[in-house]
Length: 209
Image (tube, rainbow, N blue to C red; front, side, top):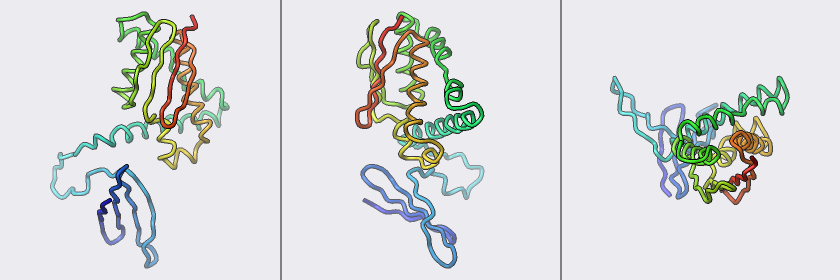
């Protein structure tokens, strides 16, 4: 474990490099005392902007998926929370449903299989390549398909982000995930069962029509 310090007159940040992640502790100088003000695992590498124009933006390949997903999921939960206040929980959930559009994308972009199977292949590719999930197609047949999300980001983000926990209970947060995916499954000809194993999530699709 190594420590790194970033300091100015008003703030001191201590970055602790641990085996599982980097943790940054921000201290602010208030009322003649240093006080802990923030704890974070993401630190963007834009600390030295002394030369203009600045174009030397560094990538954060390990963190970029988490950053992108945190922004997307936070926005979705925010809108759900606003809709829930206006029209109630069930209607707010239905506003988030995108199954018909996802099935249309699958039929358009994956022409290699029966349409229901095209959706499974499409969903696995999208989740891996666009949303950064580690998804494995465990089984792939006309009667049953299984997708396994390793270290599922949706579930992980709830424990990592304090602002989401303040907006919604975990059970309702998971219900949003399951309801969206059950709508996607139904629109593409499947019934869906969701299983949880430690940090992993399994989606089991069974043919319904």
